[in-house]
Length: 333
Image (cartoon, rainbow, N blue to C red):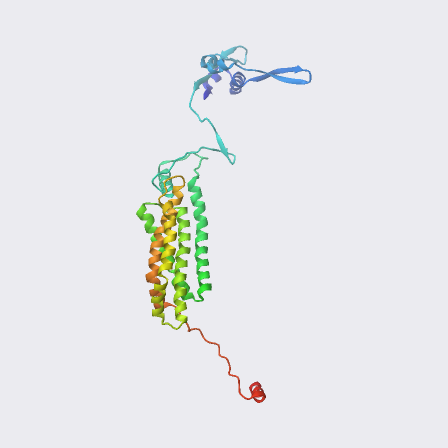
């Protein structure tokens, strides 16, 4: 940048105002209209300024004459300091305010943790001038907005799962027993992230939501099988054992299909791997723990706390009196 700074002391001694210096510099570098040229109906402005070579030469600029109030001229270098300095090649604005962007790529750590550490250090060691402020954007801004949405989506998802389970099973206890597959599935997903050294991210949160649906599905298959055996007259404990044995293959097949389908994503290294790997890791790790729960823990819980078939109060149906009309009239009375 060409930096021309007026020398206030020199200008005051010569009686030159800052406006005069500014007008001289503006005319020499930016140009000034000196008249018009008419060619028929067309008009062209005549602009006078220094040539490109003269504007690039600091010695020539230093000799640009500045008019004195009483007549005469002095060179520009006698009333201003001329030099070349480093400055911004572009001034960006947003919402009517100047903006300077500082970018950084995070490797090996989560974005939220890096931003938290940076904010702590800046609060301790950086004092911003008046009128300046910091705004954290980029992936951190997307993470923050997505986290706010998840705070609403995840509870709504779990509430909907419980509601659907109650509609399918007709019992709050049975719905709660099936829903126990969700916490253990989440534990497996968190453990898988920890073992692979991955931070919690939005894609991992989406994987937890998908994992909850698969875990509940396997638990529902198991409980409905146990209830079917109990309706046939089998004891609840024995029905839990037989139902677990009958549904062993379907539950394991469901878990294997989902797990093996996510293995390529869990091992991905190309473009988009930062999104695919956490999601697949959560699903695979959670399905392992959820399957163990469905096969071993859930039948045990149902045998102990499950809803007993036949516990519902039965509707009393009055017996039809014998004897035709006499019986009917007697019944009405």
